[in-house]
Amino acid sequence: MPFKLFDYCDATGKNIFKFWTTDLQSQQRGKLNAKLDMLMLQGSELFPEVLTGTDTPGISKLRIKGNVQLRPMLCDGPINNGKEFTLLLGAIEVGEKLKPKNADKIANKHKNEVKKDHHNRRVDHERIN
Amino acid sequence: MNELIERLTDEFSDKEYAHAYMEEHGNMILAAQIKTLREQRGLTQTKLAQLAGMKQERISALENVDYDAWTVSTLRKLAEAFDTGLQVSFVPVSSAIMSVVNISKSNLEVSPREDDLESFLKHKIIMSSGHWKAIDKSYLATVETLAPRQPVEPVQPKHSWQRLNGENQLHAIGG
Image (cartoon, rainbow over all chains, first blue to last red; front, top):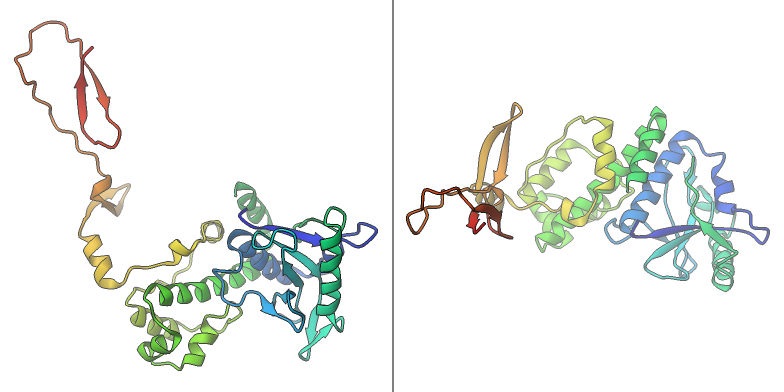
């Protein structure tokens, strides 16, 4: 794949992003995987506004419509910018407000942890199934 | 890439998953193709809006991968503005899988009508396996009979044939 995807891990090595996806329903998984596959194959250039900015610079979100509005947080890089994306946090949006509150700031904290120790604080993206 | 094809084939056994995936993918492709075709023709969103009889804000919304309220009427207006054909059809799920893995900017580009027709004239139309097919003539090999420059001695032939790189003719070489 031209672009590589990674999942953020906490200090114990637990794949936090994968854990967030375990309770997703079929429809949500299908829509989320469709967007992630396109990111892997083409990056964000070909698809207008596939990555939506947040209040925190360098942190973007994917928008997955449905009964529950999924807003997974991710960033370009942060090790090989332009060649990879790291999924930092699972979030949802309710009434135009993110849950967890300050999800973009939490995602930014995760991003900084990955930058400091990318060997231990992220793993290759695990397919959502 | 084969791995993704196999994975999708497996995942699409879940009907709900498959349709959600294809819907999301279809929305993304339409948005991407509208932007690609607009840029291919050197149009701004405002100019495209004028050609399609829409507002610029609407074009902006249609170019967003999250847009999901497509109508055939809107697509017809855009097809006329881009001067292309529009094909809306039901396809096997396997075709949808192949469109996922074959996505690229060049695959989204479409020549405007006049350019396309000019190019189409250079094609040869043939019937193959019960279907009409248009084949670019430049890809068709021609085999011409080669006349010997000198009378050939009626002896056991010692020539063999060789196809030279980049040529479609067969050349005799000495045995």
